[in-house]
Length: 132
Image 1 (cartoon, one colour):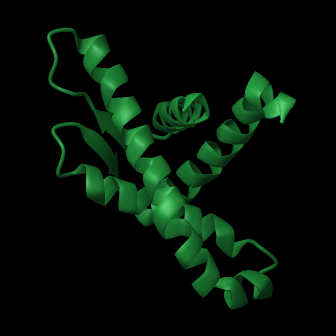
Image 2 (image 1 turned 60 degrees about the vertical axis):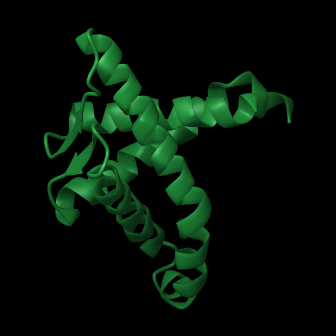
């Protein structure tokens, strides 16, 4: 359970980094009395949705796209990650808070790259990852 919560927080931090760097990625805050609390809640909810999309949809898409991933020597994985980011953007449009990605090229591609790098670095720094 703690690992799941930690993963959601890591996703939220990675999404926050991508939204901070790229003007085409925005997160609309949750309705709350405090603006900061609304933004933090929005990032956590979007991080949860992003984690669920990566856990449920991404393995299926990765399996189906294995031939093109092999042909591109793994570079197509970046396109898959960008597609998962766009799917998260589409899913969260139905929530009172959510992620908005302007376009697939270059916002989603660069956002997926930033999220991958930040998630990897934070994952390396967490104690749960180092013990296992």
